[in-house]
Image (tube, rainbow, N blue to C red; front, side, top):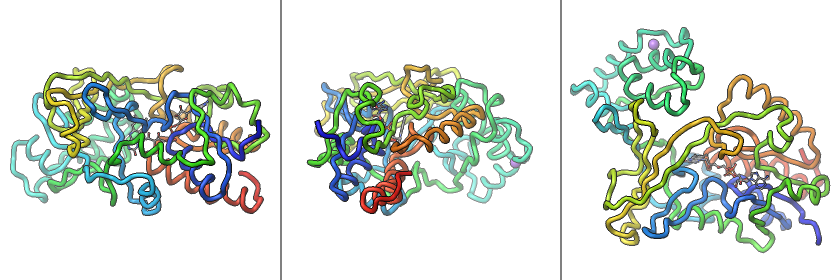
Length: 387
Ligand code: FAD
Ligand code: NA
């Protein structure tokens, strides 16, 4: 069997962007290896079979970007709906519109503050601690937004996300806690936002739909590595520590347990995402997927809805790695893995797992486009070294 020109390990947005660019622009034969039974990485979605509602299997995925190049590129494969993401948060029996804004402040304090009055109130409440003196996440948050808002909207939620009391978390987990002194409640503030009209999987499949691209599912790279290592260039988007057999120790991740259920109601919560801020509620959020696509309402089975309870925890070795924990120890290990990665001949490391970095979809795509421009095209088209 003849060798491909390039092997891509992982069929998430990073891997598929690399494969698509190399196949379309450079006419390379690209073999994509994917160990799951489907392509698409964590953005994969499928219709819940009884209701017809699209469910994002690895957690809710909202697309947004201010990067014009990425926006132009993704529109080659899909159109986007005009969905604008909103998030609500429950606390002590009331529902608030997030992120923290004038509406939330007025509801929470039971008064009709003007923008200037609200600004003054939060400045006064946050004066309790100076930001540069904060020694942990709790103090940092109080220094930014004051104790009352911290206790209602940060303390319980963050504690559940990290399974750790915020006084034991590092202050540098948060850099800013933006408060809007307007009623604006769009979750993102990027130039472009929307959901793929035909769903994520159709978009991802179109990226791979090229005669030069072969996607081999249920194939773990490590089972076939000897066939390719050192013989063809490889772009590896799996976990960097796994590539090196965890020689420098395991990098730590948080994962999310997703418990999906079909409920016998037309509408469970009236919106896509509700955060649960009370510490004594064990889950962090409930997602209701039908609200991501109101334009599909006619195609959904009436009287039913799909919801997902999310529970956050530290990942064990067999769990899906979702968010880097990024302790000081992790950062030290990562530096050693980066040196190993640099020295590994003919292999480039990329993506969320390959760089141990949380990347939104537009960032994964943007970073793959850069790797194509800066490394792969010069190598294949001009014979430059692969590094
Ligand atoms: P992945 O999508 O993780 O793809 C990596 C692929 O490599 C996987 O399919 C994996 O099976 C495969 N693989 C790994 N090791 C091997 C191996 N040895 N052999 C073969 N295959 C292998 N982004 C947004 O823009 N908006 C959101 O709302 C959003 N929500 C998210 C929610 C969660 C819970 C998570 C985890 C991510 C979210 N993202 C979101 C980020 C989005 O999923 C990333 O952009 C995307 O995962 C990055 O793509 P990737 O290709 O780097 O990694
Ligand atoms: Na302060």
